[in-house]
Amino acid sequence: MARDEESVRKPLEKPKRFVWPPARREGEESGGGGEGGGEPDLRGASGPASDRASVGWWEQIERAYLGVTSPPWKRRVELAGFAADSSDAWCFRCGRSVGAYEVVTEGSDAGCKGCRGSRLPWKRVVRLAAYRGVLRSAILEIKNSAFRRLGSDVGRDLGEQLVTCLAYEGLAASDAIVVPVPTSTWRRFARGIDHPFAIARGVREATGMPVVQLLARQHRPMQTGSTLETRRKNVAGSMHLAWQWRHQPVPMPRVVVLLDDVMTTGATMREAARVVQAAWRERLEADRELVAPAIWIGVLGVTPEKTEPGNTEGL
Image (spheres, rainbow, N blue to C red):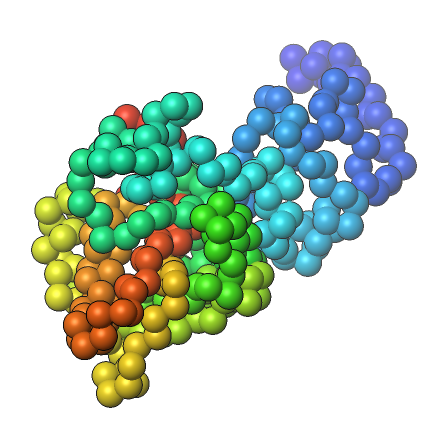
């Protein structure tokens, strides 16, 4: 029986000449793949294959032989077909994703259906995009691998978004300062990075806005997966003025941008805004001609609501 099987075996094909980069198989599309074919995505790549830039020969060598596992932000953007949201894609009060004509811009009913009528301690939220896809993977990598360069690169894009929104209000970058929401000392040592500050440096590079470290933070448990009420209790009283600002006047520009990586319920931003507003209170009471700065929120991503597709917060 074994001899019969051997007799019907086909002769081995002559090996093909080595070619680099490897030629695409017949039927494969140029941006990646259908089933079992095409180039694998780089870390953080998302979106339809037809929207991704093709991987060049040098990049294939880097990935195959040089151990390149974390491409720069601009390359991730190209591969994923990612673009920052336009200002009408989110609610300017709460940062949630909205559709056309869902936001009222003026009056007592300003905002979207989720925040309309609520009292918020800030005037405007500026975001880069929803917290998912390539942006989500980049934020997690910044925090978990202390990737400062990636934080700065993404921060530059947020800075451009801030400049656009400031211009919409008739303001310039010189009218604003950036106040990063800090991580606790313990968490900074554990992760090896104060990631909001790394992002703030990118904003400064893109806009020239001064970065002022007004705030310090006590260590509290992680808030991932917590409810709104739990988050508020967890963060209450956790922030205070940094020691260098306790005996000197706190800056009062026209706009103070409180900056963080992600906003989910807004509990952390409420606490940060409370501390900053309290620092101005004495000066405002002493001089009635002073005008309190407008507080803006600047974040890379806003967590999608549970009803939104692609909400993977907490996974």
